[in-house]
Image 1 (cartoon, rainbow, N blue to C red):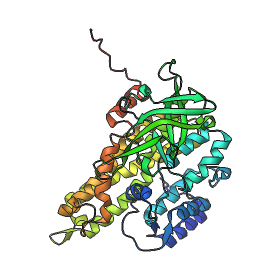
Image 2 (cartoon, one colour):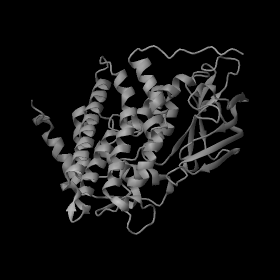
Image 3 (cartoon, rainbow, N blue to C red):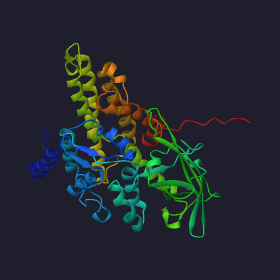
Image 4 (cartoon, rainbow, N blue to C red):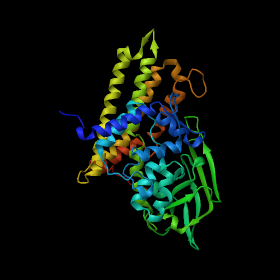
Length: 414
């Protein structure tokens, strides 16, 4: 079996590796709290040596080189290149090998940008995509409500079209990063007489609009990762709707597809695996490195095998985007389930390796990696629930992917 990329990629490989050597161990600098979660999840919160680069400047540099937003058209702020799974693999591998910081992700970049490319007007694409890719516009997602979580189509937040504006009233909950965001993409009920799936619209809301109240909710990471958001006669222009009126459920399903695929990026997972290996070379027990202890090394190899499988699976899904004839519907459903559980397992192994130091958190002087291992361990436990619980995801895989019959609903006598 020949696993070489081919001589035609030699020059590109050298170009990427030269860039990575220059920025190996670079630190992304920002004093803005809105990037705290992303930096912890991508491993950029650890102490590093090397160049310091501002967050927005780093995003722009990666786009300019074609290492991020590679296939997004130039007119919307992307690189404008053709999709190439080999080049994507070369970029991801080099960034992981040389410990180069990943591009910023998040709800705007990973979920809204591809949705706007599919559903948005030309004006919406030009207005929002470039600033989102550069990290200048941060987005939050207004989906769940107190009585509409797993059954999202039961949402009751109301939008009325009055004199060319949407007037929105209601409440959202579990809204990640709402307190740091400039914009929200939100599901509201605009057709109260229609069936519950048909009466929803997808609307873009500036978070500084009068009538919005945000109440942070502290989660098990000890951070206010979630929020409650209240709308009291919040008024936004009619053209802020994405898709047609009442078409929001179809737009939302596009977002959910991108969300489930982005919750455990396999390239970031590979980066974390390399950090885990380095941690095992540094931590000792009775004078022996953890990497030399057979029981821990066996657990590492199990995780490593899963990470390599996730990498191969992600290439399969990427290949299917370039060759639409392939049916990978089932493969896309599996990614969220396996990816979030893998990250939780990987971060948990790191905590075990640190022994009693693994219980430390936040500002303790002996904490390792800026506390990112503990933070992400708890965070991915949350993501096993977030974006649709993994138990619900198993139902989706069985029913929609494998064609198994739905669980029968028992009629309850009243």
